[in-house]
Length: 632
Image 1 (cartoon, rainbow, N blue to C red):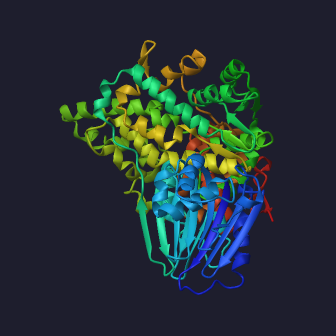
Image 2 (image 1 turned 30 degrees about the vertical axis):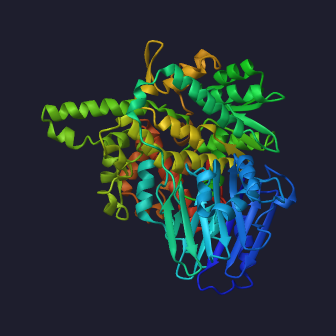
Image 3 (image 1 turned 120 degrees about the vertical axis):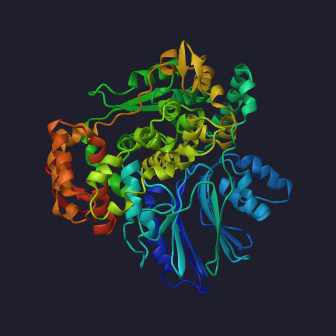
């Protein structure tokens, strides 16, 4: 697990002498992603940089940039190829020899053998770039679900790429202009989605996408993978057969994610997904598995006792951490780490927990992806109920209801932050032009086709948006900010493809007297996970941001959102914003989610648009919101 960066100059001339310094500054911005080693290589028009977190083959022989023996290919790589030993066997049979025992060299030699088609063989998480001196082109790609990030900026002279935006911003000549349409989407969803980032001229390479950039700047981009379609014929498969197939695939996925030359532990929330991972990891360990959980012990909304039940059952070396309201103090650091506007408040907890976990292990396995793959969110079932309501309205000729009842509109009502009524009343002059383009446009796939259920389409939409642009961003930044590698067995593409083919009736069905989301997974885990952990109301992790803003950081909230600086951005209509703040602080109406979204947005502006973005803002949130300085 690492951080990567690079430059490709389009006119073919060698990079200037200062290019090595530029790349060094870029990777210094992401040193948290790889504190164990670093490397910079400049060769003609190409410069590559790498920060290494050593996980597989800890020897310096696996350092990057890694260059082929003949010097024709150079690689920088972030991630893990879990099936690298299998691929190495194929390559050895074809006459390749190895200098290391790393997955990095397997990827490099795999490209030499199969070219771009090497992607079809990779089972893992990755973002990489390979300079091919023979073809005079840069080949870059991201993993299928987008677990590892890759951003790039290009103008008429060059392309710059990196694992995080803050590294690209270190390069001279890169603009710092916000993209208002992306800000609009962020206010609706709470995160930035799509190829265009919140910075003009900086894009993200989408998941499951590859890109080739020639030395003259000519670019070709293509998607190399997508989830398979639902297979209606599988609705007749006996559940018992599916349970057996699932356990085989899941065990294989878990085993692959335990391969490491450093200590491995596991996030354990006490929910279905993380408990399932622990249940299949712990028996494979030669010593007690290290597990970690977190909660707000003084609020009563955590799941620590469920996590402890799983830990006792498997005799894990368990640690739980109780957060308090002082957690809010890390917000400026978190804003800087995430680089784009980001309002998922649970990131505060994930970040703090990752810092504690890193004291004990270098790799932490999680249950991320289980809900999207096995239809675990209750909102998926609510989508089906909403569709029935819409059909009833159409049948009764209730036009206005039906017109506002597209599946995407229902889903936005469920997951959205700023909805139609907030945008129409609250947007200022800068954002008003986007009112007619609601963020639900990103959810258009929900309206398409009748061959799948609304729940199935909602899950696939989440795989395209919410999963890569919110949940996996949260996991990647929170872990890598603490030099911790996170792994996700449910996001093994072989397992996910198998599950995606299953109709809803084989993933969601009645169990123990009521309809169960994620029923197939729960039934498979019944012999392995305590019943009370499987069959209970899904809680998620509730971070008390509404309480913080109404009690702990009230002055900071007012000073920030009602300031002249924020007003002059013209993002919000001042009287409406003042009313929101007053209503929330007085308890008349809970605007916690929307105010938190705006607060994170303004701190991003101050960090990256007003400031130089080289470090977090120096703020005392609980001391009245006085800006001390932008840390050096």
